[in-house]
Image: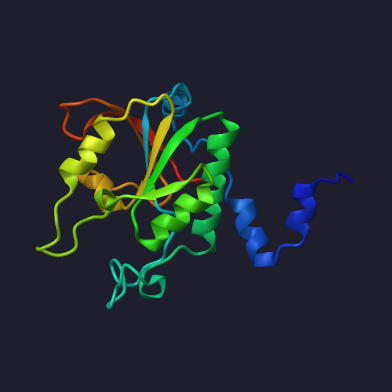
Length: 200
């Protein structure tokens, strides 16, 4: 019988958590290229990560949303938390050097960023999609963050699907990573290298 700290820890998990842990593992999805990972290992790139799985019945956040109160927001579930942990482990196991982590201040993004455990997490309002007609448009600020990154390691930005859409024109799935090569003067502030699917 194999004995290890990981197996001992898994043995103590509740059945529902164990089921999630066994399902969510890092790796390449079917048809996925290894090019985005190679770019991140090389350094000097930007990883835009959409927050982990956060079920919704509202088409967004519940009525009464408040940025300073997680209980009023749509939050990560067990799957989303495990996705974040698994993705962080994938970064570490592949040897990706992360020099900076920025996150939207919305709780599901902050929780994802912290569970990645890739370094200290800083808040950036440029990663929040506009809410309503009077919300400030921060797209130029976000493009500047992307285009200005020089490394040597990776810049991780944990954000929302609609924020990423404003840069690249499509909404990534939850816990998906979009890899950009900084390029001043381009539309999104960087050239699209590829996408890394959510941990399976």
